[in-house]
Amino acid sequence: MIKLTRRQDEILHIVKQNGPITGQEIAEKLSLTRAALRPDLAILTMSGKLDARPRVGYFFNDNYEVKRQAEKFLHQKVTDYKAHPIVVEKSTPVYDAIVQLFLEDVGTLYAVDSEGHLAGVISRKDLLRASLGNRNLQELPVSVIMTRMPNIITINSEETLLEAAKKMIQNHIDSLPVVKEVDQQKNTYLLLGRITKTTITRAYLEIMEK
Ligand code: ADP
Image (cartoon, rainbow, N blue to C red; front, side, top):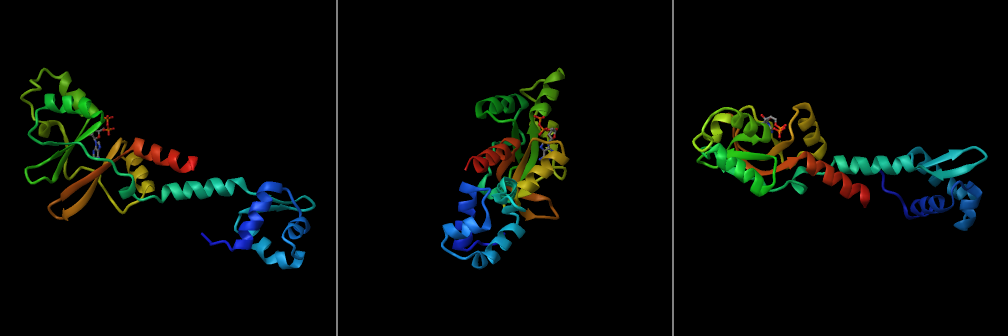
């Protein structure tokens, strides 16, 4: 994205307030000649910030603003939006995991092994499925019903919200564990946070409302 000069910013402001407005009128407002203004107007129209119509004049391109905001939103880093992960030990009974889900008001829990490495994902449907059988949920550990490594889709702190959104949509899942790799070959990861569909929606609202 190109950085605007002060004069170009002034022109944008004038057009935003007064558009459609002719080049001559803009020049008069800035006490400049039409010729002096020509290079700036060319830059602003070529970059899409202003639109120009013959015999009508210049007007502000609202689509450009929307596109700029959308781009800004999609390039936000996971690290700035990640939420606290709700974690259980993988030997935790399914019953306790369900209680935890309600207490923490989340849709997904993450299971860790005795070394604190990410071992599994336990979603609402995993817990519902386990509850449908006639099993003793107080005895059944979450490790039996969770989605395990190496099948867990993860994301790094430095990736973008766009990448997070793509991973969730492509894999039909509601959340991603934000991880730091410990050992790639052994598939060991430390859990740093979580990104959910709600995170993406909240970030979108925040940026669009600014
Ligand atoms: P819900 O069960 O509430 O609809 P999801 O759509 O996220 O939640 O989960 C659907 C299935 O995908 C579950 O079996 C869950 O274990 C699994 N799952 C959820 N998140 C991930 C992930 N990041 N990587 C791999 N599998 C996942």
